[in-house]
Image (cartoon, rainbow, N blue to C red):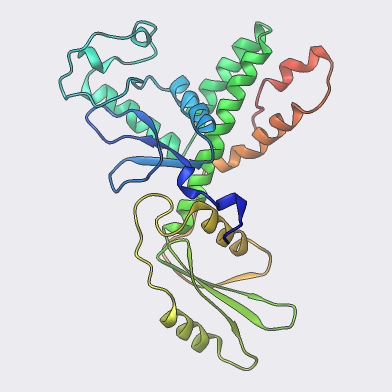
Length: 288
């Protein structure tokens, strides 16, 4: 809708990108390109995306310098390399295989299993809490929250947008059935089954008249994230019946979505007025 404030400017969202180059790195971008890079998000603000990127850098020694590096770089190492927080491919000291293993772990954390990031950030939070640096621990908690929410959003969107076609129906209060055709996460057709009409015949006609959807790149190949999430909310509502599905609609076991509840509890606790001696508890995201 023209005056829908939530999705009025979809071009302003930010994606966290694991680049595809000889020495990959994390980058914040506005557009999803048709390349072999991994995209996570979208984030509604650059600040939140930066927090998510910081959580990943806490867990993995990826290079943080900008720009592409040649296959055989010969630069001087930066301060992060001297601190042991980067494998330092810039000075040629990192092997291709060692760096590729780190990149593979980052990709796994982004699209499937965030445990390596959760463990690294929680260790940092525990250290800071033991030093009574509760505000610093809270900064890391917020970084972890930003990463998990972005990763969970991507996994949830990708689960549906990876399906070329989903046909689902729901019974209305008047006894009729409404039916929707969803292609790559985009609403392609909708209709209401008339009393006495064959469901199979109606579905076939609805599919035949549905919009042709040619998917683009990334987790949202055919619609904005907000549009696809509207479709998802309908598909996940009570009483939905899957009529037909082309593809596999599923989220990864052990994905980021399983961590959202504990993160939400920690964030909600910030709004409470509590005694000083309980603050260390709020600095930790408890294991489910």
